[in-house]
Structures are given as structure tokens and as C-alpha cells.
Image (cartoon, rainbow, N blue to C red; front, side):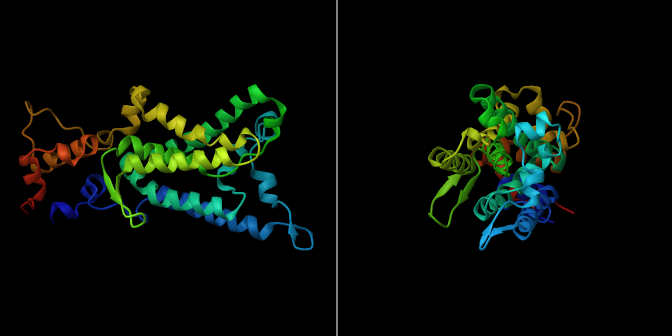
Length: 280
């Protein structure tokens, strides 16, 4: 089996992308978003001829500070992220999660990916609470729903952990780094928030990307090492002075270097090692 056929090489080097089918957490999150929205549509009640009100799921599951915190309905801390106000928000969040989720899940591992996604959603609640301290009762009653905070958190994670990896778009026909693409998508989300109508609650999802920035960014410290380092999900390799590095261990070290500094940082010898097929 050649190096290009190895799963960890495809996920780390950018010569392929992790399979959506192999990304169990991402698959379930996208599926739950889609199924929940369909249930919302089919359970909405007609309040007048051709006019439909809120679904019982929305009344039961959307988050507000009054319902989720003051009244102790803690399940809303989880359920709000799967409920969406319209088909466009459900579709965009699902597609972005489908595109970028497997990449981040492959890098972090399923458990850490889910923790980071949950942290992003919780970041929206924290930011909403901060707004409530400034604005008061209007924000306390405002409903919060949708997976946008988690999606923005995933985009933030991709921007921080895959800064040099390139991606070519069909439209527009340009090549960008994943960091550039993720930051553009985050910027577009912010633009829609600024041009939208309604209360400050529409800005709450930004708490997702802020939370991920605190964890994975330069100031993350020990948290960054535990969550973001790909070596934490592999057996530890002894220093060269105490153990002769085998072929596959050296390949792992080279792939780590690609993740951290980009493929352009490789020496001629390292490039040669990656192109060779291991002997069986």
C-alpha cells in the first residue's frame, strides 16, 4: 500500500479530504439538523387559511434566558441548536457543517470535535447573557435557535488548524487557503447579521467563533495542546537519541510538519520520503 492510500495521509496532507461517511459526529449532526427541520415543517399549526404558526418543537426547544435559565428548562441548552427558523438557515448550516466538519473531526478526533462544537453553541448563550446585562429584559425574552454558532466555531477551528492548506473553488475559479476561505465565510455571516433586522440576539452566534478562538488560538495554552495537537491522538514517539525512527514514524512526523507549517516547509529529503512506497 502506497503512502497516498493511507487514511491519515489523505486527512493531513490535503491530497484528499476525510470522508463524510467516516466522520460519525458530523454525519449525525447534519442528519439531526435535517430531520429536525422536517419535523418542524410538518408539525407547524395553521392559525389562519394559508398561515402557519410556530411548531410545538420550536415552543418546546428554542432557548431564551427566561425559559432556559430562569425557569430551569435546561434541555433548551441543547435543543435550540437543532431548530431553525427557515429552510435557508437550516440548509446553509447543514452544508457548511457537511463541508468543513469532517476535516476538523479528522484532525481533533470525534470526542474533542463534539466538545468544541458544544463549546461553540454554549458560546452563543454566554454572549447572549452578556447582551442581557447591557440591554435588559428585551434580550432575556428573545428566542435563540440554530446551529450557526457551532458552524462558525467549526470554521474558526479550520482557520486556526489548517492555515496553509489550499482549496480550489469552481465558482469563483480561485485558489484560497482554508484560513482565507473560513474567514471569508465568517465575514459574510457577520455582514448578514449587520444588515439584518431584529434585536442583538442575531449576533449571539458570534460567541461560537470567539469561544473557539480562546481555546485554539495562541492564548489557549494547555487547553490548545490537549484539544488541538494531532500527536495527542497518536502513540508518543521517543526522541531520536533513544530510539531509531522507523519509516512510518518518520512519515507521521513529516505529516505533522505539513499540518503545522504547510507543505512548502518540507525539505527535499522529506518530499522524497513521502513519494516512496513502503516496502512490504
